[in-house]
Image (cartoon, rainbow, N blue to C red; front, side, top):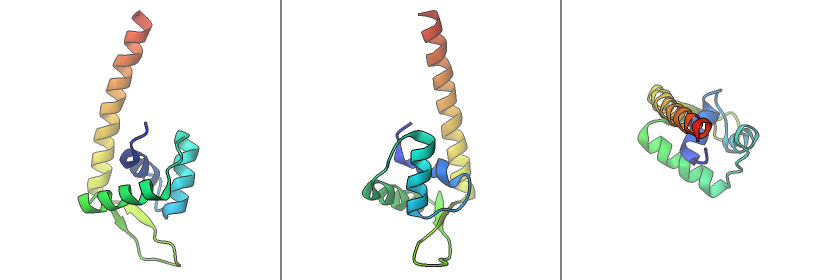
Length: 95
């Protein structure tokens, strides 16, 4: 999975994070290292869609969290990816 949108949503599924924490978390669970431009571009798109929102700052870093709409979207996307993965794995077994 290398779609920055799904990576950011998946990172925020475990709780609020600022940009650097998301970069670290995404690298840890996916092996993908998002650059700042890619990350903040995804954050902007996700905010515009109402899937994430900024949280009040405690310091200079801006944390974000999933919205209810974002949680639903992430669950739908991951369910669909799971179904695709299951078909692909089954086809590999029988090939």
